[in-house]
Length: 112
Image (cartoon, rainbow, N blue to C red):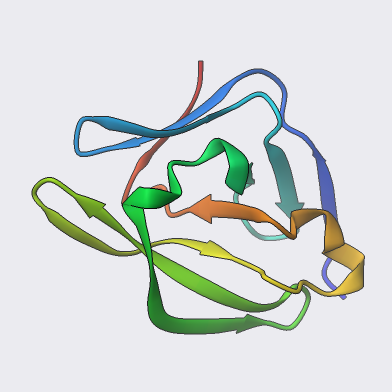
């Protein structure tokens, strides 16, 4: 199995796109996985879920399970598959249940 560590992400984290902040959290989690950049997972309660629509996209990670993807509905159109969530992650990463991560090439993710 890939070496995965999940820890509280220090500070306040913000996700923004198309000129709008769609999430801000002091309770974000940082997932570190060998061979990958760190990923910040935001609690759903800290995300403006009204701007997210579930997409048809599903992906599978052998270490985390099946991920559901989300489009962000912005003023200038949809940003396809901008985020993902493991609805029922594998036991080893169960802390990320109820959290959403975003692709850094589709949104801005900042520690402010």
